[in-house]
Each structure stands twice: as structure tokens, then as C-alpha cells.
Image 1 (cartoon, rainbow, N blue to C red):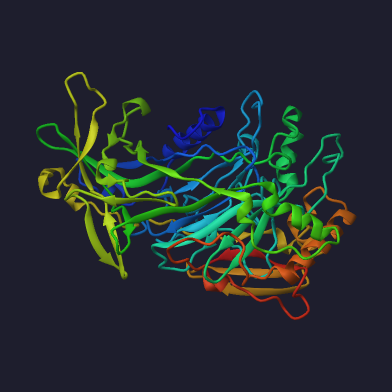
Image 2: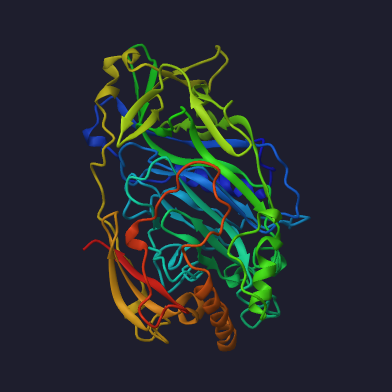
Length: 557
């Protein structure tokens, strides 16, 4: 991967990916219903965009970008399916790097995951903060590793900031049917707290960088939620040698990887009478605009700390109201080379990692249309079909592949796309279906809201419960909490006085930073997507500033 600096960070990521690729899930078509000679398989790997610009370390104040929102698969095939759309990983910048394994970052983005309970063809968005070596992770307010609230691992790592947007624990829903639209997102730090000399009573400092998610969509703009500084410094208690090395104190590394990480697209394999191996994967597609372009990433920006932090800090200290627009003069735009690298492979049953063969998918991609602002491609070859569906044009990747050797010494070989008509009928691959025929029952998300002794009830909400029915078919229940009394901040190692000071600052934000103003630099072209309209709310009378909605459950009614 030419755009990535080799490090233990990427080794940890590779290990996690390999673990996910080999985990079990619900098959799209049960083995019992398959023809005898057909075996389940999957496609996984990375599509990597190579970055041209090497950004200066002064741009350590976060980033933003626009990513295309679209259904990667034509039909949601079930819980084995796991893939992100193009996104990135944001690490803390350290020079020199600490010794030992110290993976910790903000990743997440648009996609589908095996633990997504209410999945549809439309992707969802998660925040994806990772504590030291996956000790815990936080995907948004009230969403962390696992479901065990008695041992929260990231469940309290993200605090709700916006009073106008609900955050479901299953992920932030885009409007159903979204396709070929841009989601603007990014993380910049806000000085919502003050630095602390101690952490959980120990002489270990915690910084005051509250890395905040900003969104830009048609129906919502502005800050949504933030990682509490304690989310990062909590793991200093486990490994004090890393104190001060994570995002509570350190700037972000402006040189990031931009990739599409795919861990499982359903596939099947079969061998014909001559011993030739064939495979078929689920219909995988990319949107195409009126010019024939597939636009994947657009206007990727990195920021100096002064782009937002300085004027917000002056405002909180009694100065003038800070402008909502992030200062583009304190930013730089990243550009991309017209090259894509891929290691998509069929994960054939019984084959070890080193014996897996790559697919030749990049041979159908032409990257010559990538420019300084947009990572894009066009499609070539007769095996890529252009189809109209739902009012959109989609480029459908080849579904059928044949395993070939380059020469007699080649034992790994590669999978070469072939026409459906060239696949022998005896393989029975034409008969397989990728429909979700064996879904497991969805598991509701439930918080300790009914426990009178919990932080969900002490001090407790000020209004509710309220309900909202989402486009994915689920129903969420939520309450209105005073900002500083929400469960995440009751578990953020803050004193009453520190939380009250946060309350004062956030009330300023709520009064002046409304969801209809401009924040992130706007895209140069393209149409913004919409968030599920059911997630847009209005505070109750008297709670317009200083109160936030907290989702306490999500399930099917």
C-alpha cells in the first residue's frame, strides 16, 4: 500500500481484518439448499486510493471530506455482509512513535457491519473511535463494544452535543434510497473542557481535546457529538507509558490512508468436470453520474488548529461569538494520484491466507479522470454492465470468475472475470441466490434506563419518553437530558464544577451554532445527501439551549 507508512498500526488493522474475514455469520444461502458441488465463499480486501500530497505536520487540527453514499450491493444479503465505503483512519501524530503496540484512532464512516441489527441496502454511519489496542470502542452516543452495560467498553465514550439530531445505537441512518449523493463529515477538536492533571485520581494527565464530529447534509449541518477526553486517557491507567500519546492531547496525523475496506461480500465456488475452478460473487455496484464518472471521495481537507479552536476558545473566555464557518485559510486540500490498488480476493474454503488469489477488478477501472479535488474513476470492458435502478445508473462489476495460473510455477494464480455464458452449466453457479434467506431475529438495544440507581436515572432525564420510527423499520425511544447530566458525561471523570462549566459553554453553542448554518467547506460539485428525516428533532419548549436527546433503546415494534 504505497499511501500508507508501514507501522504496527497497520499490522493491527490487518490482524483485525483477518479476524473478521474468518468469523462466522449467517449464510445468504444455507449449505443444505446449495447444489452438492457448490461451496460458500466470500470476497474481501481493500481498494486503496494512492495519495499524492504529503501534508505538513502543522495540519494536525483534524480533517473533513465528502464520501459518496450508495448501496454497494443491489440487495442486502444478510449478516455476513460487512463492508465500508471509502473512508479513512485518523491517528494521533507522535514523533517519535511510542514503542510497542499502541493502536488507537478514529475510523468508522459509512458502511455495513455484522453487528448491524437493522440493516438495509442504504449504508449507515458510525463514529468508530478505538481505544488502546481495541480495549474498547465507541460508535456513537450509547454505542460501544458489546451489549454488557455492567462492563462498558466505550459505551460512555461519546457525548451527545447536538439538540437537533438523534443518534441511534445501530448507527446514524441516511435517508432510505440514498444513492450517488455526498455526505460531508469530519473531526475537529473543540475546547469544551480544561486539561486535567489527574485521571481517575492518579497522577496521569488528561487533555482537553474534544474531537467533534461535524456533518454537512441537506437537512442537518454542524457538530453532532464528541469523544470525551477520558475515552482516550482511560487506557493510560492500563498502560501509563502511553500517557499523553493519544488524541486527548496529541494533534492528528494529517497523512491518512483512504480506502474501501471490505470484509465479506457473499460468493460461491464450484469446479467443473475438467477440474477448472469458477466463482460467483453477489452483485456489487457503483453509482455513475451523467458524465460516466463514479465519484468516491471529494474535497478532502486537513486543518491547522487555528481553523476553529482559537476563536472558539476566545469566545468561551468572554470574547465575541465564534463564526461557525471553519476557516479554509487555515486548511489545505489533499489530492490523489490516478491509481487504485486492490487486494480483493476470494476467500476460498480451506485455503490459507498466503494461497488466496486476487481478483482482477482494477482492470475494469480507469482512474485517469481523478483530479485535484475528486477521487473518481470510469469503467471499461464489456463485462461491466450499466443498469438503471431506482432512477440511478449503476456500474455492476463482473459476477463470474475463473481461476487461472500465469504459468506452471504459479500456485496462487488469480481470479479472472469471465462472461456468464462461459461458465459451464454443471458448476450450478447460475442457480445460486444471494437473497437473505436465513436472517436471525434482531436484538434490541437496551440501556439501563429502568435501573433507578443508574446514571441514566440519577440525575436522570428532564422530559420523555419520546419515540421515533426510522426508515430501517426500527423504533427508537429517547429522553431529553440536561447536557452535563447525560450518562456519558457522568462517566467522563469530571467533577460537578467541571461539568457545569461544560454546560455553560454548550449553552452558548446551542444558542448560536444552529443546524441551518454553514460549518465544513462546501463541495465544489455534487448533491448532498439527507439524514433520515425521523432523526431530526426540535427541543421541547424551555429546553432550546443546554439540553440534548439521548436514545435509550432501539428495536422493532
